[in-house]
Image (cartoon, rainbow, N blue to C red):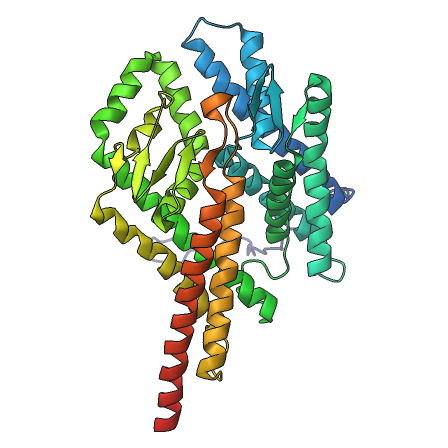
Length: 410
């Protein structure tokens, strides 16, 4: 019997050995066929068609929403009216019976231009061979706009309506083409550009137009705030209901860019008209029968204008000065006489372009007193050209003299 104090020995020595586990071969997924990238012509063409469908849906949805708040017409009439409104946003004026309608709702047109610019940008991103250039940007923009305009012509031919004022369609098509080229331009979003004279002059003209639009927006907001009670009374007198009120609001928003241009024309002193024989200007306002639209409640009262309204004439001077400053910003070494001539030319060009913008924002909305609605073009051309041109000339002269003295001081 072994002693409890003796060492206990195992009968056999046991050794434990660990072996690494065998790695199972990784299963490789079957190779997938690489999807062919969508080419830029497909994106441009499909994007143009989708923009046409989306804009038509927006316009017809607006009229259907108004139809829900009124029992005066059928659903088919609402769709047809929405289709005509969509054509009008594309600059296709129509004659409905004896009524000629050519006033373009530039709010809808601006939305269409934004969509086209986005699809043109997507198409330009697919064009990787050689990188995008200005020539390719123009080609991509032309394809996108052509694809968009194709349904417009199809609908126009199907309606069998007389096409009124093709010049406004050309103006809308030009705006859409420039929007598409802007979206597909090279180096988009990187802030790089070729500093040539065409680019500088274009930037100066655009800056002057933005100044005038800001002045017009401020004038419109002030008019609405001063006549809130009148605007509310016009809105309540229509008895539109909830759906009709929403449709009426969106419809007025579609013409807000037109109202900005009209108000800017007022700020320049030439004013605008709301039909034959009417005038709305800082010197005085003469109105006849005005449509019961709440937005028109911002119109000033009939009679001579107040002296405070004359301060808005400074908007044209500021626009001309801004155009001059933008042009001369990239030309520091210019004599004062050359700076004055350059500033005057840039202001005169900006005023002429604004007169063209005012023409595009005007038109007919019916017969008799609803014809010739918008800025008074001949007085506007004179006032815009002289005000912006003179302001640009003076700004260039002053800037040239200041730079000349600073150079002499060095």
